[in-house]
Image 1 (cartoon, rainbow over the protein chains, first blue to last red):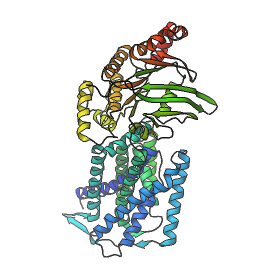
Image 2 (tube, rainbow over the protein chains, first blue to last red):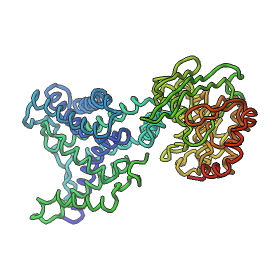
Image 3 (cartoon, one colour):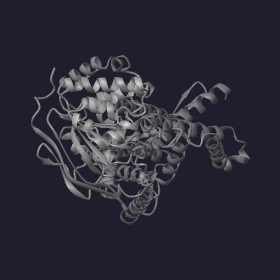
Image 4 (cartoon, rainbow over the protein chains, first blue to last red):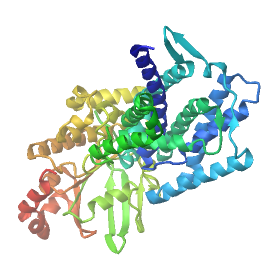
Length: 298
Length: 256
């Protein structure tokens, strides 16, 4: 092993996991920008995509078809979540919405626990999830490369959507001044539904690779991703989409960097060190790396 | 180029409007109307109820009593976006442009209710020619525009929906005197195009030079109404708003 190959491996691992974190954070921030709601039930959208992978995995469908259907399932779940749970409390206080999101989260986990299984269940995964490539003395997991590519495609697609489409422009405008956006005739329900659908689709993509790492799905599978998403978006700035992406990559590089270079006897403290660095970042920039000065911008 | 047919037809009617904010009565029975092709002024000091009246018309303030109708349909209880879709466009106090979006994106959003790409492009060209600075800065962030330019953008954005009624809430507020004159000149140009407008202003002199009729609001009620000439002749009005208004105008016109 050379320093060079270590470096390449570090870079690919960091970009792969960082991209995943970035997508997690984006799914949270795109809803927060418009409703000022940190949707903690976001993790359950990942869970729903995970169980879709599980249940559809028993059908003769090819894996790619299963994956696409699971992403669609999460997007639809996002839409339903907005329609059933959040729309009725939309004009209430932020606290009410936050508590609603905890309630939805708990409810969906309980449903999964009762109807499917409280235990982790193995998900059928294609071969390439466990294969590795060796180039020279660099050993790269294929799934890392695919995660990296899918993340970039998703980020580019989302950017084009937010810049070119009228709904995308309206989403960015609504994140800045929701009332004024409505005063241009943009329908509030449409913008909010779009945000939840995108959030769900991102959760679905995240689920493919997050669950792909352990190949297990359980009712609480979304807990860790939603925490990572929250931390990454706070680091980047909760009101900034670019901040969410940056926060995700920063957290990814931190995690892998500490994993790689922390002395073996300190490895158990990796997360503690990570969060310590996060706290330092927030002490220096409380609004997040790219967040607005006032934290809200409205 | 005339945007709409000549004046004469009834357009907006507000009747006996009451608005309460908790224990405070913000509006106490305001009635006003605007005919097609008219420019109507709504004047009064801070807190007289001007913004509450506008807010009620566009659905962001809920009246406790009274009626608001536009082209014979009631606006009461409609969501803001539904009211805009009926053909009213507000230019809000403080401009409320989207600073992170480009000038072009701001303008495009103004046409959010329209589904005629060719017509939208035509209007983009028209208003970028009308406001040359918007054409020059089309691809730049709107937040980089100066205050006066942002006001042009806010007005251009409102016009992109092809409204039949334009509501202008304090368009000169916070602008330097030279820019105030520019904004009023612009309103004059829109009048030449036949645009129906409700102009809410604290700058009474310039407003009366611009409008056909005006309403003077005081503590939530219409205190006096008439043509611009009648308003100027009204004795109390003269004393309260034109005579000793210098200090008050200076205070409220200060840049924010």
